[in-house]
Amino acid sequence: MHATLHQLKVFETTARLGSFTKAAEELSITQPTVSSQIKQLSKVVTLPLFEQIGKRLYLTDAGTELLETCQEIFEKLENFEMKIADFKGTKEGKLSLAVVSTAKYFIPRLLGYFCQEYPNIDVSLKVTNHKEIEQRMGENADDLYILSQPPQNLDLFTKPFLDNPLVVLAPSNHPLVNEKNIPIKCLDGESFIMREKGSGTRVAVENLFAQQNVSVRVRLDLGNNEAIKQAIVGGLGISVLSGHTLISQGNTDDLAILDVEHFPIKCRWYVAHLGGKQLSVIAQTFLEYLLEESQKIPLPFQHFLNSKKQEISLLNNKKHFELVN
Ligand code: PGA
Image 1 (cartoon, rainbow, N blue to C red):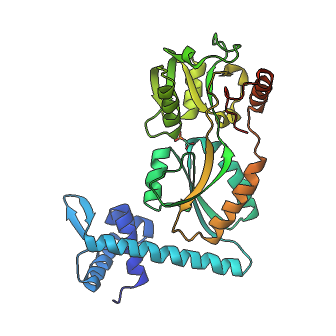
Image 2 (image 1 turned 30 degrees about the vertical axis):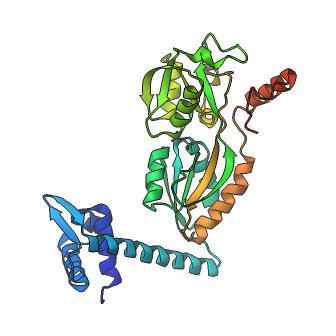
Image 3 (image 1 turned 180 degrees about the horizontal axis):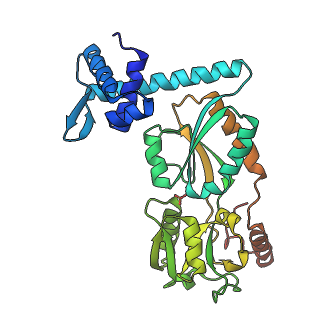
């Protein structure tokens, strides 16, 4: 084989983007150069790498195999560059993170502080829901992932690092606001705003409602925690969201946490990476930073949890509430 690194880069970019034109744009070269590099590479491999059907480009089996090989090569080279920078006493390189929607309430700030300490790193942060995180894990798209309920069917390293309690949120004028220990059955028939399909929060809520035989009236499916809070304030219904979503609540008078039996749902966030993944120096450094710094993050509704603790000790009914800390 006499393929050049440049040809492999052109091929990897084309395969990843599924287009000669987009690859040319990303690499700042012309489209005919992309085509001729791919042609030469196919000659070296002695098999076609792509099939063009209509306007779409498909990888052949040989192309698929070569793409995996290229990705391994480029990952290793990137790691090598980061290690060299580390030997020289500077940390530089790329950090790619994918986090579930609720983690966006603290990760960007943490990243900001991290980047101040290591100014020479480039960060890519994808904020999405549980299902897409699983897909990205399957594609080895990122260094680290943050989510609750890590999938069991993938070989993963996982470490829990922060509680993620899910609470019932209602508008502050809801009739149940001042009630204590509301039986979960009271939610039967309530107008409810549900996170979109693919959301881990939704799965946790649906599981609890199924276990407890509760049937809410879903008025709206929404894929955005902030929009859900606005919809609650607007009177469309109640919802269950991560307590961390309250961190950005400007006017806390608009929303209230309902003290419902079996809530908060006890979830934890995990930081994860693929089992076989050789973490870069930067990713390893960020992982350690995250585990240490997350211990200092206060829960935005600590008052509520504290008052629940008191009630529990008064009632001596520990089975009633599963507390997160
Ligand atoms: P999601 O997050 O609802 O945005 O999918 C769930 C999780 O905490 O994993």
